[in-house]
Image (cartoon, rainbow, N blue to C red; front, side):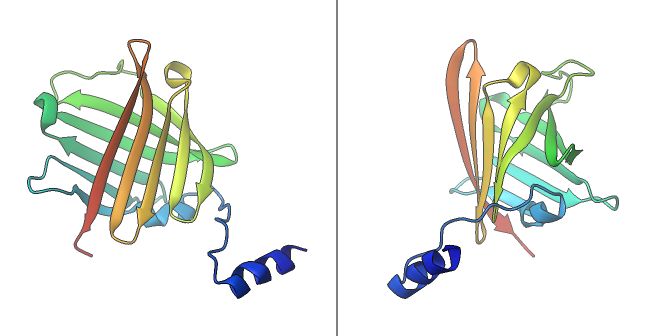
Length: 161
């Protein structure tokens, strides 16, 4: 039956439905690289690299709103992966999260070049999605600030190779 459905899509010239992909560090290799915010004036950049032990390590900076610096890591957790993130002001003089309390998001869905992460603990009810299309990376976050929903979207272009 499954093959018949795929054959129907191919015969009709339609795109196949997105296939689930395992949420693994290897499966997230598409995230690595230097990503710079698109636009006439760069206001942010995000970098992801695979460390020698396989974990993904990320950092980012943004100049709008007084500036923000982020430190991130993606590690295996149970049968999936988890993103831990810390935020600092532009001078690194003030951390937004407690000393031992990074934000925690666990992968809930992985597809080819897309990962969705759901918040745990203090971030329960929040989610983030990274989606890569060629040399473009889109980050979409749905957060809760002061009890109100806040949506954040950043679009980055890959720099160098």
